[in-house]
Structures are given as structure tokens and as C-alpha cells.
Amino acid sequence: MRSIKIRINEDIISPNIPMIKKEFNKVISEKKSKALELDFQNVSTIDSVGIGVLLYMRNELSKYGKKLIIINASQYIANFINITNMNQIIDIM
Image 1: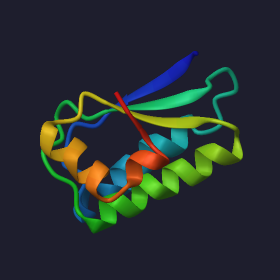
Image 2: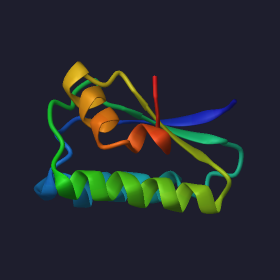
Image 3: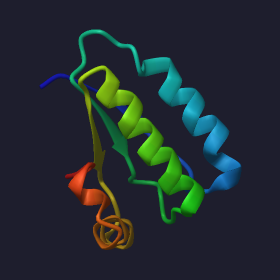
């Protein structure tokens, strides 16, 4: 599966959301990709607004038949996503 990768270099919290959405909007309509990988290597926390933006991304991607995949998530982030049951709709690798 061909995917596009975006490296997130900041926490996914309210003040950082505009930049994250800007990067997302640049790649959403990429025709040849089947998925978007968000590289969370440099992400240490996520807030409720960040959760909302992940759900927004997932919903927008699904309109194009694409998947959202999170890679290199810290144990904290992975646990948070699992506890909120978001792992049912967003893949974590």
C-alpha cells in the first residue's frame, strides 16, 4: 500500500492544530496514496482538540477511501488512543 507520511514535530494540542491541519490539507487529495501515515515520533501529548482533529482527518480521508495510520507513537499516546477506543477506527503501528 502506498502511503504519504507527515511527521508531526509538535504536540497535538490546541495551539498547534492550525499548522497540523495545514499540512494535512496539502496531501488529502493525493491521488496515488491509499493511506496517510502520521509519524508521532516527536509527539509527547495530545489534548481533546487533538483527538478531534484526528477524527476529522480520519473522516476526511475515508471520503477518498483512504486510511489514517499512526506510526512511532509513544506508549502514552498508544495507550490513550486504545483507552478512548480510537484504535477501532485509526490504525496504530
